[in-house]
Image 1 (tube, one colour):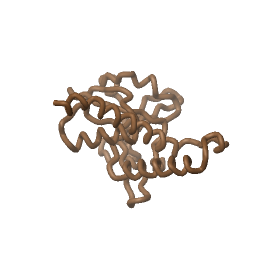
Image 2: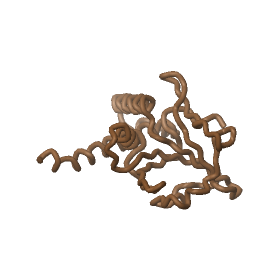
Image 3: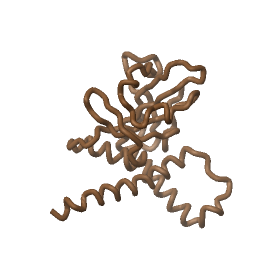
Image 4: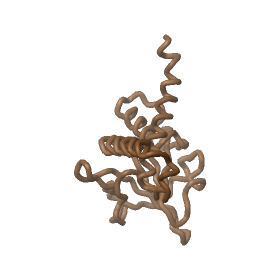
Length: 187
């Protein structure tokens, strides 16, 4: 009984730790500040590099489901494609998932996303002329594999950003402006 009472605290702790790992993984894709002296001593930087390395290794072992959204600057309809990690262990790259209904680069028109009830709405984070990425997983599922995917979402992509609905199911999602750790698709 006591363990059940502490479950929400444990989940919150995992989310907090996960956000820190996400921040480090995401920083790998962002330009670093020009002055490292403001960030602290060399030991702190070494610890952060080790945490980033662990987060990327975890992501490589089991990547959550990822969708790339792209909004053209000229007002063309939003496109999307599913991504996965492919390549040799230690040097994977994000690649489009093969889809017979998509173009040669995996893109499909995002015609049904208006019906998916994204909360917050997609327009709040999708910027014209750029791509955004979401990691997602089914909400509150008892399946161990899907729970692992959720843990990857929390650990590698930060705390839940929002939810959406698709075909009667609710999904949690997180948003990143860039993919962490590994090179994006080449097109």
